[in-house]
Each structure stands twice: as structure tokens, then as C-alpha cells.
View 1: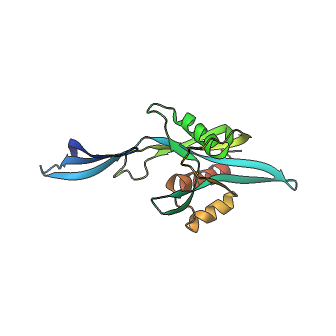
View 2: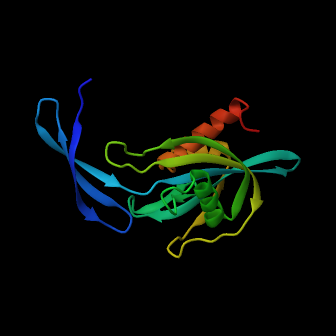
View 3: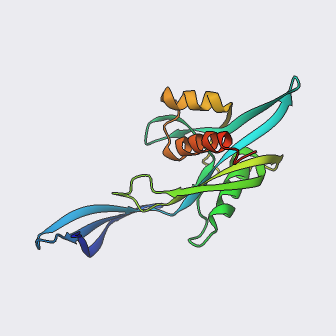
Length: 189
């Protein structure tokens, strides 16, 4: 199969979190074309599922964080997530840290789902996605620039929020659908 070949990468802009590059790519016919490439640290996110008994019935609630995002100039509902503290930090450790820091909950049981790249044609940031259950209380320890509201939804409410465009974050949508699928197949208890 014919494909492009990277021949040069030039740093165009470096910010506090991302680096923007211009890539020179060689086409199979010999023509050189330019591509943009954005580098960011990898990270992890985790869908926390809390189970409790209400009126003699088991009730499940998914725990989300609601915070302002400049990219959409609005409040966004997401799973707790964040970047690795250092390049080789274990994705699971990252997810556990973010869960406790942002929500005050620590899952006793974790299920690895997948790693995603939200915009593979432009970004290299990989995000590992987990589901966490059997929650115990920890301590909230948010970053100074994090202003977060905790949102709880049943799995049905979360699905409806996706279809109503109230949840638009890709890692969050993947986690919601994966949880419901795994639950229906008995892969999560």
C-alpha cells in the first residue's frame, strides 16, 4: 500500500501544555505536502459507578464532573480525567488519582476499556478509559484552576443525555456505552 512518509517536523508553537508542529510529508508521487500535528501528554479517564440500596432496591448512579471548557465556551459533563503527571505514569494510576482528586471517590474495582485518540488526524494524545465500581470515600484535592460540580445520573439518564447532546465528550460517551454494553452481557456486576 502506498502512503505518506514523514520527512521533516518543525515546531511552530509551544504552549504550557501542547506543542504544535508542521510536518512535511512526502507523497508516493514525490510531491511534498504539509500537515499539522499537535502533541499533548497522554492521560486517563474513569467512569465511576456508585451502587446503593434505596427503598429496598439497588440503584446505580454514574458520577460525572461538570466544568467550564473553553473549547465549547460552556459547561461540559465528563468523566473524571486528566493528563499523566510524567510520561511513563501508569494509566491506571492516573485514572485513580483523577477520580479521587476530582470527585473524592476511589474505586475498589476497575475495568480497563480501551485507549482512544480523539482526533487521530491531528493529535497524538492517548486517553485510557476505565470503569470504576465498589466506591469508597477518599479526599477531593482539585487543582487550583478546577471548578467542578459533581453530577450523578442513572445509566438511563446518562444515555438520554448523550442523545440529547448534553454529554458531548468522546471519552465520556465511550465509557457510558461500554458500561451499558458490559452490564447487559454480565461482564460487570
